[in-house]
Length: 149
Image (tube, rainbow, N blue to C red; front, side, top):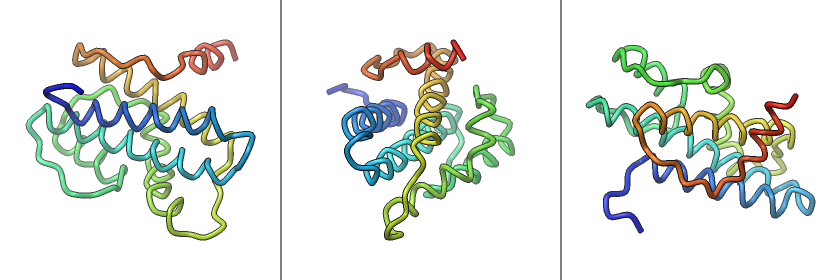
């Protein structure tokens, strides 16, 4: 356990959980895709809150990714926000509650797989921006496969 754990560490842990769930259960039970989506939302949320916190900006207690991005823009905080995360902020926000509370709600595997890749890319950009180390527990094969397309 890290002595000085950050929100980015928590974001990375959620990303690793999402990837582990995806790799373990994607062929067995599509219901697990909801848990993957939830942990991806948490990863993006915590990453954004880390960026706000490290730049001295107080953030609200919210799970709304769009609201956090708006606060980043309003505060003129320069973060490596990827186009995918920005364009899909509402999708991530909806995954926080819909995946847990709406019965028979299922995420699409294709969307989850792309979100895994893009969330990893986003966290990697943040680590690069702030000169931090990213726990490489997450498989980089997905990024390599995506780059080949």
